[in-house]
Length: 93
Image (cartoon, rainbow, N blue to C red; front, side):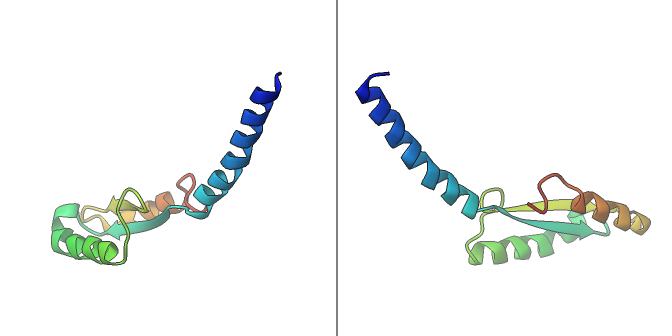
């Protein structure tokens, strides 16, 4: 390996380390949302919820992820849906 290539690789490695650390520090927040009915029954509340997130600087799908689960009137499904949210890959990381 010549000196120029060595210096370029060293510089790239030195720059990549802080960038990776910064990306890890800015983890995307996650929210689990359980609804007893379907999404259409929550239209007004969801818009207000999303507006509140935006007011605090969150962009759904970018700086925050919202996982929605709907029981569709079958309230006995709520514990199962809650478990699904908790066991999502990467949920607690």
